[in-house]
Length: 262
Image 1: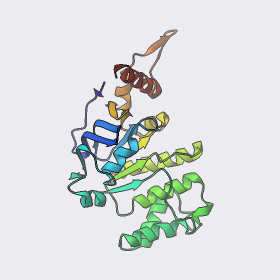
Image 2: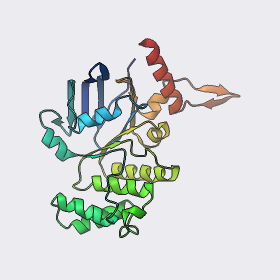
Image 3: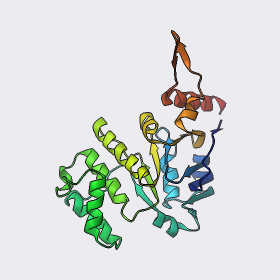
Image 4: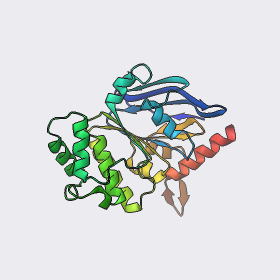
């Protein structure tokens, strides 16, 4: 079952049609379709092994699909891989920062590698945007998990890529650190960056995403805004008080329904 909701009229930053990928006999992706509007946060929600990271690896040109079409920032990921890589930044499940260097030194290093003018000014601006100015001179080894993640995301913004992939960015973080990362992701969207976020946390998708797609056993089984997804389930009435369904209710309902139809 695929429940398709309305889509934005703006030109999409990401377009995926019929994406398939198998590893020998294991079919990881079985015809994935979705679009991501420019400047929005799109959450790809699913359990471990659903295929979320495989989708991100294909879209970031690290893996070739067996079938289907995918475009990022208007470029075909197969035919225009170099243009796609210039348009994106990818942040994996663990912070890729140098713990020996300070936060500012990490940012300056990446800015220099990308041949940007005034790398110090670039670093200072990102430290300010992600509330790391006071910690900028400290070694990253002294940072909390949330601070490292925020620095990692800040590093991914160097060069102003229009599209950022965040693959389960809060894995292993405590609740306070997760909220810090959520604030950083919201900052990205406020700046006009398109964010594709993969997560297995229902509350994370609920807090951050403009649109949510649920990936289950290699297929998108529902795709819409949080309000649209909640309307898939009827509200429950308890003593004349209407209870709206949560994203958790929607998730387990559509995943269970999809499993019964297979």
